Length: 490
Image (cartoon, rainbow, N blue to C red; front, side):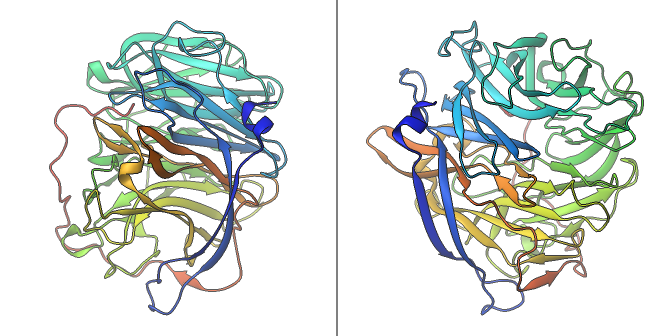
């Protein structure tokens, strides 16, 4: 049993009235959301910030959801360790801990100074849960892609194996082919980029439950980007939507189990509003796939807002990874509102046998985009769609308001994470783990991992708002200067 369990998991019940919806200022969503605190930073090393936990990923298979995240954030990159939190009963109870053998702060200690960029996957063919993360040797870019494995349902974790060792790596991700009818059932695909080499994207494949990994391969056109999220169609085709260094979204594919990767194609350009309050927030895409093989990718974008005054969450879909639909706006709030939406995490119900897809979407937002470090009020929202994104529920506020100065500070701004994640388990509900914070006590923070205790409904009764019909503002462009060189995200 973890230290957290021994002390008793802390539960917060938050009754919230969500923001007014687009179609009428009188239309609101009422939520009675219980958040369970599933992890707390236990470290005390003076070189990083405590108590801080940031940047959670999640994955669900059956009734099990596993989350992994940075713990003890360093100002200039990475954390003291990667934490994990696992539920095997659809969020009713949680077990938590910290990965062994990666950093000098782990138990047992590992060889690395820091670690970042955790991503979770499950390999059904080998019954292995895995967390892929990026080991760092200080403030510089990563040097080692490490894979931590669990063979008992995400409850205990083995010391890591190396997937690849090379200076200058960044932003790891992982996904496994869990379709028994796929010719590549049991293949797992790890993604990262070579920041020192111009963010050239690299892919590696494991066929033995993450024990060994193949030589990294590039796309046919040596695509440059970061934050690629592999998704796998039922027939085994792997499609990887990725950020084109925050200036657009690209996609590339493999049809031979990761042996080769085709040239990248353009999904869409990105026009984004610079998020206020010195919050670390770039338009990193989040991708998922439905049981029929349609891929959904979302990111934050200001193309539908006059003057790029705030961001919406937008979406594009594809059946083959080559041809993508026009970008549509998810109608959380009116285009005339002041609400700024960013850092989305999308989930698809893979248990739903036929179309249209059921979608869950978690995101962060400010009620007013024009704010400062002292006035910005950060919250977490949730919407869902039962018809593939044709219409959406009214938003539910899950957490907040959070003052941004309560969050870990980094050389790229205050941090909840470069990404967020939502997953759907066997109860047919969406499950997410989020970074939530209260005011620090002196120099000690209170930024930890929380999860909605009962999960989130995919199709609650009540108001539904139709998507589509809106046109991007002509000439919409980002309202902040582009990053110079090749960005990093660790």
